[in-house]
Length: 356
Image 1: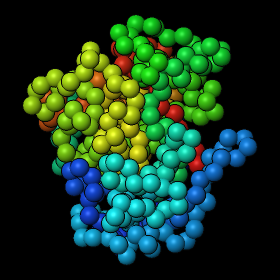
Image 2: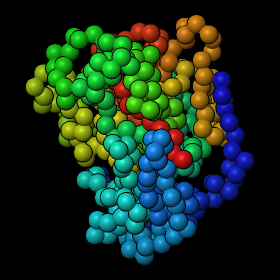
Image 3: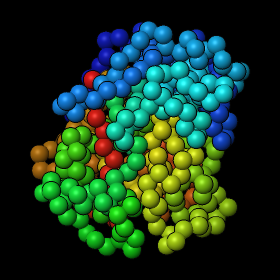
């Protein structure tokens, strides 16, 4: 197990104070991720010859955005990546754009940028109860620090995965989808297949902490889009909050990116519903007890024969609303499966890359 501690932890937490209060500009009025004024500054993205993604930061973080903030909920420097757009729908971070869900996102080569900094990971009993339902081990909530990274904006499609198979980089997967069309998300992958695809693309699977931060930002939201309960306009899943079926041709997946209003604060789409996604980490019982106060945590393999379960995130199109409504779709929900086993029929792929 690899757990790292950040020597500047206390200094980093001071970023959380003094940020401007921005008007929530998403569909539900919940402001987006906050507390990262120093993490990004005015940012420009570039790709080097070897494919490494990098960002150049200036020291003028949020200065333009602060001047145009309006009173609202949450603390977040308006106009910066992962935060609400400034009044008039603009972003102050270089290269960032205001996305339909109302936050600023920085995209390059099909990936979105997530700045460095702390966030709270795990189920919040005041917002998401019941936590740890069914033994999903999403407690206790804890704080971790992540270095900046990039994550795919969309889930991997059938066409993209098949290109890897044809190139000899990925194993073929079961072709049992009723909607196995090129534009649909790939399904029936196990963890090894997902790892192989990301490696073929020059990327890797995200860590579990990276996946959750990319999905929920730093304001502790219940779902990628905020705290509003799920609707058929926000995600692909089995039933809406009134118990009716979401309109779909065959009640399965949708092409990645079909629900722009369901975007995470950083612009990642379909992080709730559609297909679930593998991450790097193994599903340790005590993982969340050990992660608190760490930097870039990864729960590595507990043995050498791959017999331990690995984590699977994001629910899928078959997630039904029950109990505390949208329960399976919440950003902190986690489950696991043996790495060589298919996660039923809804296991997909999303890749990440460290920012340099």
